[in-house]
Length: 399
Image 1 (cartoon, helix red, strand yellow):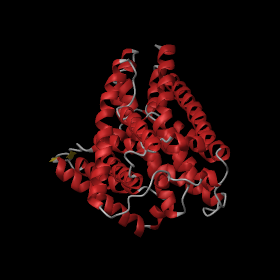
Image 2 (cartoon, rainbow, N blue to C red; image 1 turned 90 degrees about the horizontal axis):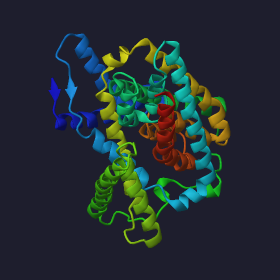
Image 3 (cartoon, helix red, strand yellow; image 1 turned 180 degrees about the vertical axis):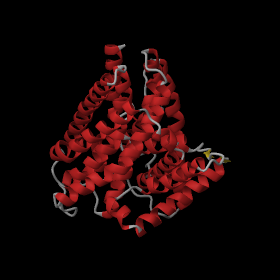
């Protein structure tokens, strides 16, 4: 049975509200700080699996808004890429980028080693490692033709299944890992934060517009996001023409970042940053719940043993790094624990996972300004460029 786009969108909204309700009532979900879109999306995915197992016609959700919501979310992150803010958090951003890039190389090597152990092409390990985990499904699909040409059969299908499995793993384990750090290290969420790091997306930029004309504020927010997405699509086409293989949202992020920094200097538009942040959080919630509710859990359960082994090894490696080196190097405090949770999110899934994980943590504990400055810049912006270089290097090495 096919569920229409309008019905799918309506169901996604209901599932988000259901996720909030379940997390408020089920203590375990609250203690693990599972993101609301994951809870709601899994309800639909499990229901679809039950329908299939019962021998009934399978449910097919027409999630036409999934990709636009993903691009809209990443566009709002582009508006946070202020050079002024980057100067404040530069060392932390650079450190996290170096960590993420190094772990991306480790993901490729770990996956390749396991693939070779099963007698398979080492590039399968690269595809199921850094290409679809730290890169996400979009990056995996973008590079799928190159992997297919290099001898990895069914690269697109593998990229989709592995990338979505990574999103599930990131959603299930990212927040609990950070929560364990906070509890076991007895970190104080109320501890003082250095003045230079005391910034968040909602307080970083220009003057507040207030609520005097809410309709104008909403329209202005939609306008700047939609305009950036449109122009970003043109930029992505230009980059593609130059041979750059990058996710579809990169162009929109670049345009939004340019828009933000131009406005910082001129003040001509006076971007409504608080409204943009709310729009980004909403787009994130819809993107995640749509992505998870459309998962084919039967396909994930049927992954070949080598792919399951690679995923298990990648999860174990990220967990060890998050609980040790990442938390230690990022400051050994509450903010570092939230950063570590976000790191697990974008190194196993996507930046959307990272933001959902961090939002779940700060909703329960307290703000984590350094985490919300560094993780979006690295996870949604810089790591895609670094990852493209890493993937290309391994393709050239083993093709």
